[in-house]
Length: 233
Image (tube, rainbow, N blue to C red):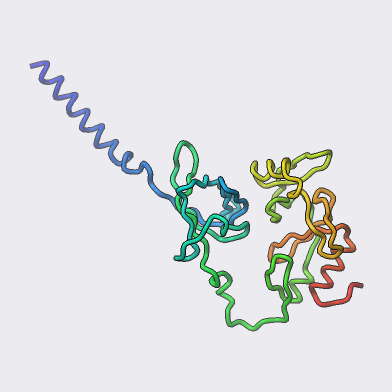
């Protein structure tokens, strides 16, 4: 009799454990979505910044698919600064991207369509600026700029020492890139047309977020005047 009771207790315990554990098992492999701006991307990883400025890294695999709107896209279509939604799953402590969906061409900035427009000019990133916006090109401190993504942040970035010079990156991937890739440490001054070392450059940023590197403050002022359609003073 005692044996039967023991068997019954074990059976009930097993049923209870299964009932409790079943919902947990159902969530394994659950898909999540993350939306934000692409801050870094290569063949193996993608970094997304959400609306609160939080950075999240996603692993890209051969099975990851890409879309632009409803159309098929490629990994090469994912560019820094693009808006994206990443569907992913947690696996082995990493966020593995299942699908990366980019905004459909022509839909970004659609909210302003039909509004009255001021005279415009183009920024180095290709964005359209009003004359007032162009004149708002301002100098910023290097430590607030990720020099790989060429993006301005509201907090200091990771300092990266290379050859006695200090560069800044927003994540370990950018830190490694600055350490190993000499091209990532240089940019072209749009005024002189010469390459400038980002560690010693005068850095300007436009209202669009486009970051521009200059050899001198005089070149920054000249570029500001050029964008605004004025002669340098």
